[in-house]
Image (cartoon, rainbow over all chains, first blue to last red; front, side, top):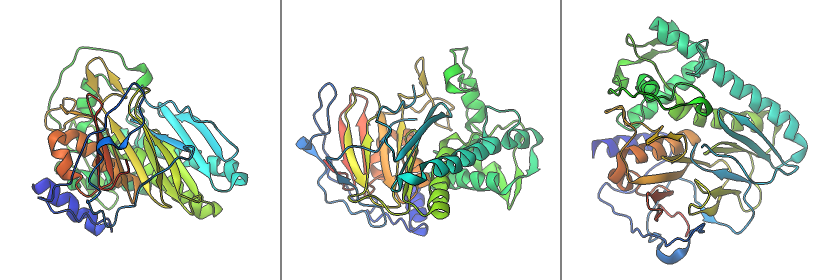
Length: 71
Length: 294
């Protein structure tokens, strides 16, 4: 609890406000997958989470310009 | 193995190997690729000279040996970022894991890591490391490792540098750490998020100025170990997550959150509530939070 609170306080200070309250559960779900699967919408998040201060992420069908993987 | 970029390199792109992973830049103005690459290479060289723990002659290595030192503005910036990340995460992301990392065998460029006898011990408390302006004080025997944050800071700095100096939109990708600056292409910067071949994947668009970081327990892994340590134990974090990706206003914040999520394990969903993030379990199920698209 304290760790979450500390992180969110810093996000506020950096202009990256995390609005979700500690107890505010976000609807979650799991996507089915196959051998090399694109994420599919079989069970995406509820979309109800707010993320003020964080950029909006959207899906795209365009060709990727870079890859983010573990490094 | 760390990321090996397989996307094509077009006229708007430059790519090379650095720090055991792939550096890639993409510009909105292809005519500026060459000078942008030169700027980024110089910035990465400066960061490496400042804080590489694989180099005995890095400024950080020398400062740790001395225990007390006046450091350069660049190293002070990198240290401040590392200590801020530690404070934000209550020590989940700590710069004091240098000795533990070495004890686990990760004490050189990843390509040269070999299995060895392991001796594990908790890391020093990050609050015992003091940075007062440019004056650094490190407890005796503590080796700092800025690996968890320095690459993200480098991506943020390099992107800002290119946008400021050359007046172009730019994406800088250092392995999983992606920063952008300046204007974005129409529809945003498009990023493939996939840890390993065969893992679930998705392509997302992020707006101008946004950053995306991915932390993984399967890249930079050797034997049964991986490189994200729980500072409290000195062991690789025991976690149910295979991969965590986060979008944030800066790459430093994105990386801090994704790394802390790995360390926290089950607590990650609370940590990331409201934050655009994508978590992949060890059995490759995908969990999306904070509006991450399906």
